[in-house]
Length: 194
Image (cartoon, rainbow, N blue to C red):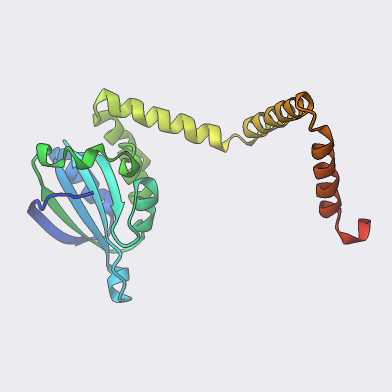
């Protein structure tokens, strides 16, 4: 992914990423912000993260050190303490190709949550996002809610096991499944149970 060099608007050390995100949202910036945690610099590390924006709403996040994008990328440079934030403006057309990279996209409110722990700013950002982006965020929340529902996941696994047993029976593989189950039970019980 390539992000074109933008016009530097300002670069300063801030105590809180929320202030930067809030200003970018208020200014309706199209461009990107480079975040460099100062603790990392003191330790000789090169942690840097980039968040792109369209009309002040976050679109992509990328951790340049780990070469990871999306929410995982955000978490790589979500640190407490002073951070240098360099704000760059870029024409929307020049960011269009980068903004098509699905693997690096983040829901609109995610940078406020992950980098700043600011739920009110996350909601304000989501409210400012275009309708399609708000829908994208709801879809993401639904997936996260499902993955957090252990009972629903176990029910799906149970149904899958039942279906596998039924197919195995159709294909005459009952003995293989029974042998595997017996061996698995013996392993779970430990060596003394044999």
